Image (cartoon, rainbow, N blue to C red):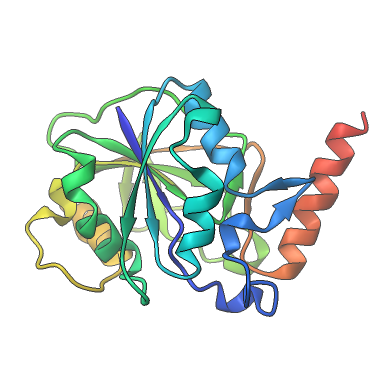
Length: 224
């Protein structure tokens, strides 16, 4: 099984920290944010990883190398000077990802979710890891009922940025810049998205304040 880490974004909300450093290489508890998912993917036995690049992509390429220090085989999907968005970035990387379902991991998300080898239910285009809504996203993204993600009435949760996707979710679309969110909504409306609720450690490291809070949490863990 392969995985893709989304690491191409500009990180506008993290400026000025990201003016000269790509967001995945910002540090928390003495480690680059990108180091955490690479380590967890390796531990899960997911040996092949694709990382997309745009903003300061050379720094990420130099930091990761071929992935061997994590026990991984890493390839890069270079999108040029402008990132193609979450959906467009996946579409651009399909030749590296292949035809089987793969893990998608947002490079600016930290979580201790136990990644593992897994497939998709028959007919499903995605399996989403959902989390309780954080204060900055109180309305959530999707409802989750009996393992099915949908857009109907019901308690809503936040998409964590961790998912197993089938390449078909983007393969029929023309290459270019586009987001993943509407595609997930359409697939959920067709009953083709499963999900689970994870209530462990999770942080969307989207602002300097959230990065500082993650630093505090990880520091408290290591001092125990």
